[in-house]
Amino acid sequence: MTLSVSFGGLRSFVEVGRQGSIKRAAGELNVTPGAVSQQIKALETHFGVRLLDRGTREVRLSTDGLRLYAKIAPAFEQIDDAVQLFDGRRPGPETLVISTVPSFAACWLASRLGRFTAEHPRIEVQIETSVQLADLSGGSTDVAVRHGSGSYPGLDAIRLFSPQLIAIGSPNLLTDGPVPSPADCLRYPLLQDRDRTDWSIWLEANGVKASQSAVKGPSYADDALLVQGAIAGQGLAIVRNVYAASALVAGRLMLAIDAPVPTPAGYFVVTRPDRMNVPKIAAFRHWIMREAGVA
Image (cartoon, rainbow, N blue to C red; front, side):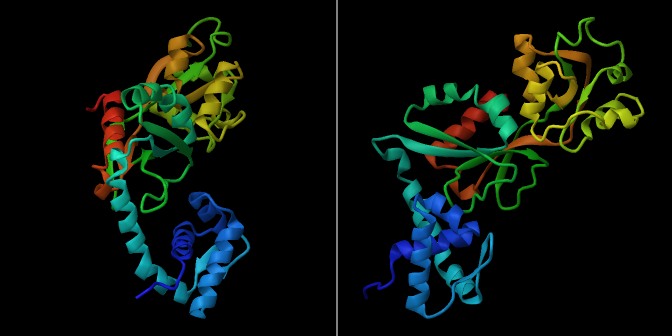
């Protein structure tokens, strides 16, 4: 029996269901949002039902849309998985899409990726950054590196390392060298994280009762920017040691005091269990574990 429904239309519908957005689905499919909308409308005309409930900023699957999605989405996942099995055998380059948080990409991953590409010249790395864990159940993301507890239901997560909170500052600000005690950091301008909590956590872990002054100062939503503010001499900062390591080695930053505080969370490389052995993913997992000293 010949399929009278457009395969591309069904693919677009599944991607809209995964992404919850016509615009994001279009990005994944490398087409325009208008093309995706037209394909969905053609499906709705063909089936005689409404497949999407369209809102101002997002779309949701209608009742009929959910029924259709439940039937065809697994089939497209099987197709994607089957294609991935042969990616490593293609004569040309293949793309590995890595999702991580902006700070980790800027301060740790980017400077090391040259070693991965030297080992695997046929794999073209694409870094995507977001605060939330990327949807590994579909779409283009192959592997993620995330900071958290390691609890990612349905996914395989391997701990790479657990960071420490350290106090840093520019040598131009700390002209007299490291401060004598953690409490002496409060004599300097302080730079804050997004939630204005890290200074209080660090001080109290070092036996200093945090005062109101511990939460004052400009705040940065991203730790990479916080590090840059400290390098510029704007104040002292509390950051995870992984983000300041290269600047410390280069002498652009120094420890305000050698009093690191361990953190319970860690950095994890996260993948789908059924895709762990895809050659490009297995290669990256092995490489990053070796870089982190756990392989």
